Every structure is written in structure tokens, then in C-alpha cells.
Image (cartoon, rainbow, N blue to C red; front, side, top):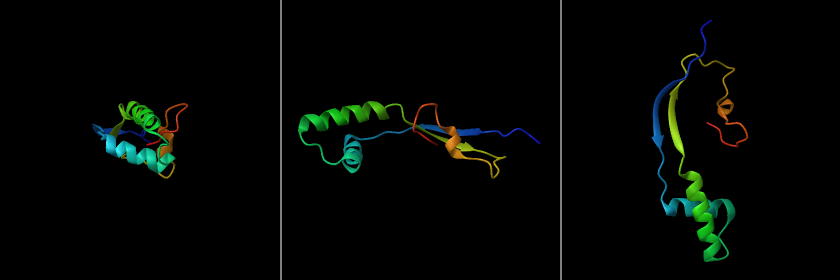
Length: 80
């Protein structure tokens, strides 16, 4: 049996506007109580999302044992 392979078809940097990020913050945490708190959350989320990328992959030998959750970095809650 051949070894499974992952073919990287593309890598894309994701761009987020301040408005998109504000919507995510509000949906996740509710409206900020004051402008300072809102600015702090926006800055923190912008910093967090600065390195976000999407990868387009092909897994030609994937079978029933394949789990995209196995692509989780150690100690992180991120998944594919």
C-alpha cells in the first residue's frame, strides 16, 4: 500500500476588514461596553488574524480513517 500524500494546490492569505472583525467580535462576545474596550478587542483580533491563511489541498489516498481534525497544531484549538 502506498503512503498517503497531501498535495498543496494553493495557499491564500485571508484579508479581513475592521468591519468584518467587529461583526465577529460582536457575534462572539456581544457589544463592547465602551469604545476603549471595543478598540482593544479590535486590535487583539486584528493581531490574531494577521497570519491567517487558507490552504487548498488534495488528498488522493484519503480513506475512512482520514480526519481533518488531525491537522491541529499542538496546543491550539485551530483545525483544518
